[in-house]
Length: 162
Image (cartoon, rainbow, N blue to C red; front, side, top):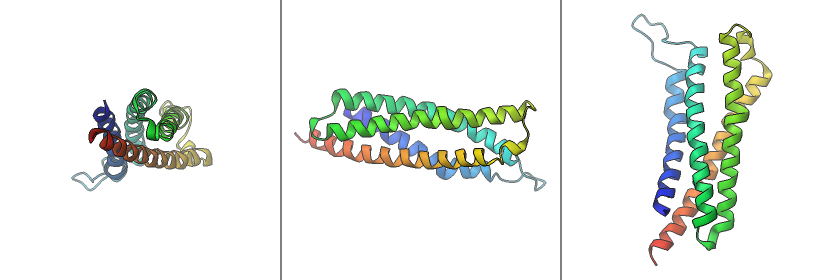
C-alpha cells in the first residue's frame, strides 16, 4: 500500500510539473505553420489548456482523496498528524482549484463561444486575478505534495527497513 501511495503521489507531482513546464509553453507558444502563421490564437490556446487543466484537476482530486484516505487509515504514527494535515490541505486546495477556479474560467470561455460575452471578459480584472490566483494555487499544491512525498518516503523507508 505504501508503494502505491508513493507512486500515485510521485506521478501527480510529475504530471503537474510537466503540464507547467512543457505543455503550457507548447500550447501558448505554438509552432508556426508552413506559411509562418500561428496554428492557433491565444483564445484557442486557452480553450485547449482549460480542458487539459480540467482533466488534470479531476485526476488531482482523485489522487488527493486516495492519499488522504491512506494517511488517515494506514500511515505510521510517527508523522501521522502532519501527513494527514498535508493530505487534507492538498485535497481541499485541489477541490478549490477545480470548482472555484477552473470551472468558472471554462464557463467564461463558453459564454464567449456562445456569443453571450466578448473577448473583453478575458481581459477583465476579475478574470486576470482569478487566473493568477489559480497559478499560485497550483504551485502551493505542488509544494505541499512534494512535502508529503518526502515525509511519506522517509516513513516508508523506515518501515521497509524494519
